[in-house]
Amino acid sequence: MSDKHTDETQLKVAREGGVLTLTLDGAATRNSISAPIYRAIQAEMIGAGQDPDIRAVVLTGAHGFFSSGGNIANLKASAQKSMAEVSVNTDLLNAMILSIRDCPVPVIAAVEGGAAGAGLSLALACDMIVAAEGAKFVVAYVKVGLAPDGGVTHFLSHALPRQLVSEMCFTGAPVLAERLAGFGVVNRVVPVGAALGEATAWAGELARGAVGAMAVMKEEIAVAPKNDLATQLALEARGINRARYGAEAAEGLAAFLEKRGPDFAGAVADDEDRE
Image (cartoon, rainbow, N blue to C red; front, side):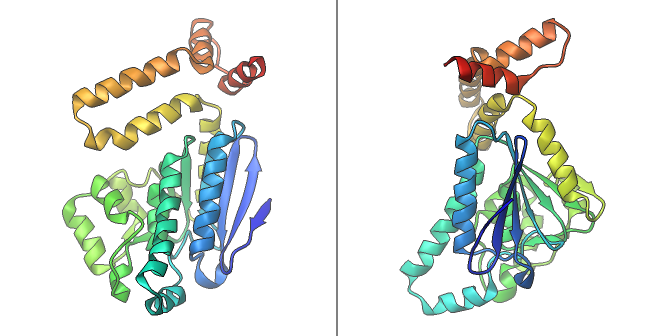
């Protein structure tokens, strides 16, 4: 395991098999995030997308909490900065969020305790969420007189009724993992302390799957809400044709016909060795 040091929270990086685990570690501020973390996570996501040996990513927080979002002291100090200086920080946050969505491999958030503010955006940017029982999801900004950033209104509005999104934004009141699971925002609710283990096991399962095909699916899922049916049909046609001639499809179809389990990772590695 390695540590990516920042002024406050550190990003701990570990890798086991095909799974990359990124852990926010900042006990004093409940894993608050700021520009150094934005850069570090973005770099890891870009690297994961370029490394064929990384086949899934888990994002989590240490000390029984996912992330409290932006550091309040930093936010207060930002009022003394120019709009241009503040915009640089926001641009870095946005780039981090987009890097998670653009990462071609599955990204799973493992949430213990809660996720607030930009920490909520960080969790929602992931492809799936595993949360501990009672974990609190909080938009939070209104409590300190701020409006949201980090894409939280985008993510919530795509998943929840407008009235609930308004309640979360206007009141800053927490919504429990169990309630969000009822809407499909949280995929799995597990006992306290079990989120990381569950997410890691799930990531391992995905890493053994056809991650190249998943990358195509991830692109399709990202644009599906804004596409009409004809556009999405055309996109899917291109996607299946891209996959059809790849090593994963060759292995998957052969395994099905031979009545055995597929070895997608091995098939891709063999294909790369031949190139």
